[in-house]
Length: 389
Image (cartoon, rainbow, N blue to C red):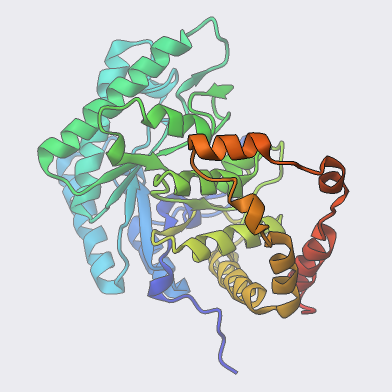
């Protein structure tokens, strides 16, 4: 029997060089896996069936590489892309690893650091565009504080805005076909990070000189760390026309950034996310920003990557079954049934509608007495996911 959960190019599954290339280091332990070159990672991703590969500038070109070394690395990477057919849909800049960014990049108190961050980002944008990227992600992992005595948050946001405005103008001046996506996170590595959630990023975007060029890159783990509903954040970004990219992984609420395999912790949450993305016709990359367990050997890293994609495809099929299940759809029809008379009172404002609402009679006790079969509906979802429907 053929396996229906084999990824296809049309699924647009991507991984970063830093994901399957993770060497298993953590704050309490040394590396447990050997480093892979970018070329080796491209071939690994092609082997497991991915569509694309994304990178930070220094995932590909070391920060201290000479111009000649840079050219050789990029040439070899392009050759690997050509050999495998993988594409580069997204790129980003590492503004968090080097000690120069210990106090942030765009929001650092030191003006020389802020200037260096802009220089580094422009060069990284050039590299991303050279390799075909259409989306450029900004994750401000060091853009924050441990003590609010250190920075004025209003001034910090002004600096952040100035940097993004500068870079959007740079992209326009170069004639690049490139959009930006801000990636929110509440904390870690900084104690508190600016633009902590999707909502705060969406509000910030509207203050930019070119808001049409800037959207968001929500990540499952980051909103979940804050105890928020990731689906709601994604839906808000989609409704605003700002879902430019998405990072898929999994996370336990209240923990450090775990970056687990997609669906590894909360299958129901992952199901509703996949159902939403497929239902609205999201056309961007399905990017897995996740890491294999530290216990994984190279073969298990491949199993991790295959598992991310396989789980997504299984949940996509479950979403189709949800739409075809007569009992589920019957409950939804009952729940969503609308009263024509009441519906006529709703919609955009008009003086006539306001007067009709003022005159309408509502049976408050009847409204309060009506229940909804949400327990039944949720149980049916659970049974669907458990494979008994």
